[in-house]
Length: 482
Image 1 (cartoon, rainbow, N blue to C red):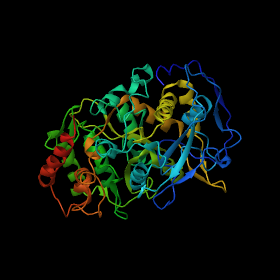
Image 2: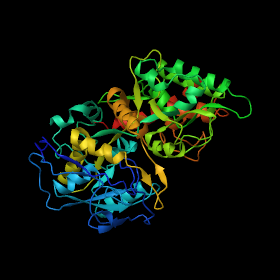
Image 3: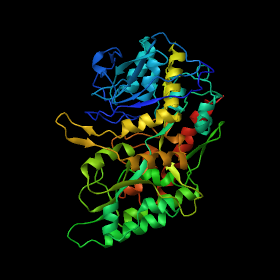
Image 4: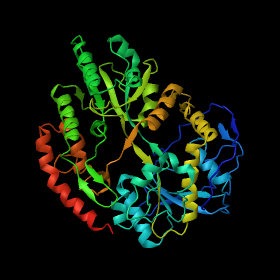
């Protein structure tokens, strides 16, 4: 499917029929049930997937040299469906894949607990499976375990459509091949806050500080300290809650594991990482951190910041409709030269032994076209701005246009950081039994100073506890590089 991808003028047709919908995206929004390890299929031809007409539709648009897949079906193993469910619109990528390239996707359901076992069983048993979600474990561990095959023969990576994300594509090159071809930045880890609360407490708006290049660790800490100090004593106040240790560490632009395309190296002793870890320890020592789990920005009024990926924003808006919520990247180190974004890369993996590399490569191309063409981007935006409602009409979530535009700008104007330490198996990354002793090394390095202060009380101790173990893990993966 080489030389496929120059788009002529696409015409966008918007039909705003604000009915019961949910915001599409790269997150796991379809959820699968248990399948006993074997997986159950949900056909793309099942009419229950489709409305008669999408609320926001993409009109006919020509794609140069679009290859006709002739109705070929990709078997997609995941916890969520790429086909529309729950009265959702088709995604822009699915619209292109079906209408322009005449491909289909059949969903094989699995759960978060059994997805990798199901993948392995299908590969070994010869059951159909072609495409799997990219997850951090894919590289190097998934390739090391021979679960995937490279995409180089099926995607023209010299095409200009990949120019805006080429540095990430190059970063993922492994053994001279591209097993991971990211088409977008996804799941940015952001700070959600209430402008109303900031104003009531005489605090600056972090978004305005960000635009003035003044949003750094010092401003961040000063705001939290002031907010806590302003409390009247009737309710304990905190500066921040949520899941954000990784974002603080990666705001330095540094990673625990470095990869130069040839060898992995241990970077745990980097002084910038030490500074970030000491910042986390300070939050804990000053009691600025509330360790309670919140699935959205709290409506209690006693917590200033909420650190979480943007998947929580829609529900946060619905829970706090009058709070004037806004989102901003995590602040940069005062010594940093730019803002670094903690996020993920959206990609799909071509499964080992699949014979449908052309179709999988075409689907990945459709995702990239949806990210880069102005008309398609506008269609995706309008879909994202539709309120999520229950069957009874209650608003479950929404995203404002200002929030949407800001997040898109953050993805383009900051540098996204990825740490290969997350892709080195369960020793490096995993919840274990949710104790300091059984969690993955990366888990502990990112938040043990916040969440497990009784187990480790300083960065020096934390670093020394795990540095040698990191070296041992790295040796295994370096030995596999040819």
